Length: 402
Image (cartoon, rainbow, N blue to C red; front, side, top):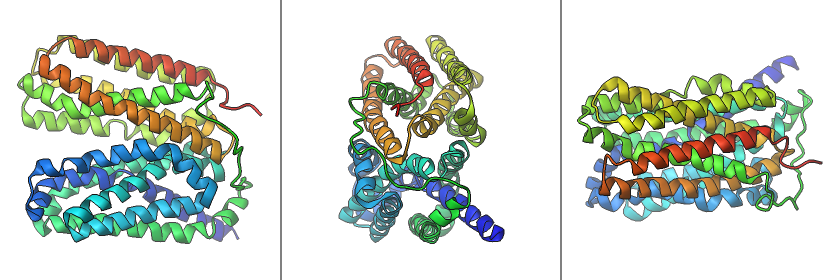
């Protein structure tokens, strides 16, 4: 019995890790091959620009309805359907025609938008006493997946061709859904050995959009996403404006992408178990680091590597901590998987809507005056909003008191 329990525990951790691993890879890898894809399709790269926008649109449109998928199909089947959508979308993109590439990307966005909401609910449902541990597992995998595929895409493309990467982007989701299908048939038996609750029920009448306690979660998620998307979209151009070398820019952006990786190992467990005062200290400290980094942008007239590396690190730490806190607190501050899904869906639908405005508005300001202070004031303002929302979220005892 103990041997079976250990086996299924390993299988469950593997399935959670692998699901997290593919929650960004199909989105972040394709842009690295967009030139090859455009040549194969005999179109310009600009015509394929929507491929990077479609997933964000799907996040906005689908996140809020993902909880209804749970209500209709159940949590395990909802995860299976989300993974199936990613597999089917990846299969269509391997065909490499304009319709199949776009439809495939829509399906992938549909699947990942669901997983963004379903993963916190899955942890809440089956492991309510180990929320931090399993949030760490898929959060670490999410960040690691993007980093690994960003690293291997160039050498794989150079040695075996870009189409080999397209096949790999199909093979990994297929492996993931196979592991999940094996795991889900034994999930309830496995969790029963740990004394966990597994009823896929919740308050169907719970209205998250009219719950005032839920709105700070949305604003917090939106503020950190806006900072992240704006930084990734425009700060390389800002550094080019200040004559930072392309090699240095690459290193700085890599540092930004990876700096939260070590945090994802321990931070969700700490957040899930720490008292309100400790959570306030974590979020306030992260907010203070981001605020100082934003204020330093007023003295940006330099090409010094360490200046930009420190700002990048500070903003990366802030967005990383607040993202991990949000994903963990979706589970901690709710009573069951359905509530978790509804809160995560609301926060992400509204949050990604807010985030989508950041690069556009920053771009307008950048065109008017690339080194102007207007965008710096706004950046500081958003950091202040993030800090305030962090305080409110940390002091919220529970989304719904029973």
